[in-house]
Length: 164
Image (cartoon, rainbow, N blue to C red; front, side):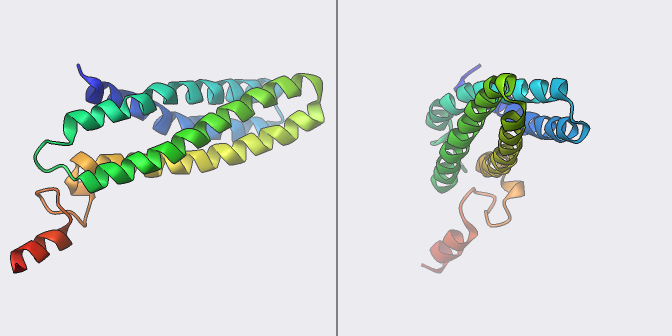
């Protein structure tokens, strides 16, 4: 097992998990359940912690795959740039969730407002994670990238090279 394998395994946890956490948050807020809200906040914090090794295994994974045939450096760069943004926002979301947990113990009204803020930032984080995962999938799965050839090169580059 290498870093690329670990990265691919771990990547699925935050991408899939964030949807479940968002759903749990919505249910907790709709039911006005403090217990479910605490669980949703705890899972948000856990999700932000799991995202750390996902991000940290990205660079070593790049080193493994970048020279393989059919791999586009352009796609790797796009994925890497988007991953940085998503990672930062997921970690900020985890920090907001932790603050919400602490503040919620002392101020129910302020805690509820922070919980809504946490949910909004969580939804944005979820969108960024899905977009990042989609970009990562295109690195190796050309069947999901309509603008790529079977050789992993952008189709406009192949057409340009064939015309030369």
